[in-house]
Length: 498
Image: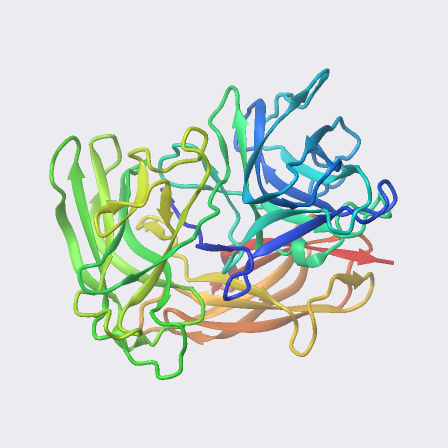
């Protein structure tokens, strides 16, 4: 029946403490036309629209007369995951020097216009590459992306009730060498599904969309400090499952102690307009203090919950509140750290969930244009058991940038069980499929018997790579009646060479 799902992971921008940002340089010390870097943002059009402008998150240094060519095109007919580079382009005249931030690029210059209507469902590319200017090793443009803890692909829609939409093609792409024009993108690290573009498309005839979340603060939960997500629902649901990304408080595992309290979930309903919220569920412990969560990185935790039916419509909104009242700020490890996503885009154009549809608050104070990463599932739908936590290099080797056609290749899939209860456990399986043909490249492989909120990785070995670029779909799930059932999946593109 219904399958409402609202989820995305908190992301990290730039060179932060855990090294999960993605900053890609478009240098100007190379000969234009023969050797240049290229960055791209790929996504699926969520509906039909006419683009008016795009917003890009960038920084620049020592720019004098250099410009960047901007294209807004569809994918190739034979390979939509790569851009069509034959269409019209406009010049992006760069600021001489600017710190990290958003810049608006109008998609019309003189007689050149990129404001053509785009059909919903079409794979689109924003492509940025050096166009002209004096070679200067000190001149630099940096294009920023974000990286999730696990590769979920989502496009955020302006004022979208129920959350962002899944988009398998939503991905940041980059190459440092385009000497061969037939190879639009070559670096596997940026074709990895973990990198997500930071962009916003302004539309003249449809809502804006993109990924505007360039700020990802963390909030320690303890005592009276809480964090909550308020939202309205697009349909009635019988909530049966709740999950969120978080980690333990503290900066190091050295001397780590257990929190003094569990992490609790309370669900409240507020009738609109003007009524105080009423508790309809909880507070119920969803993460036990004995769990000893990771401190170094955020990861997902899930919990089965049965608050009953939650109603859609404009007259009811729900507040999902996380708290740990007996924890104290006096002990750096006594509490839980929860990330939320926010944006520094102007509110007039931002994909803002602070629109009475969905928004995050910290201890009752609105977090601005922000949202808490979480997942809710309808009781009528199939419960997710596992999510892909990360794609990793094979044991003992670097992440391969290329794969030799006809030769063997391998990668590790790290999966996390978030949907089983804490006592029965459940077998997690993953497999790798050719996304173009449906051919299974590496069949279902069991990770382990994992109880809820535990993770495990397995190495997949592929005996022979195809002669063309491998569009691999990595799937994780379970076996039901001898059939592999997919819970989560992502796309990973690997460049194969003869």
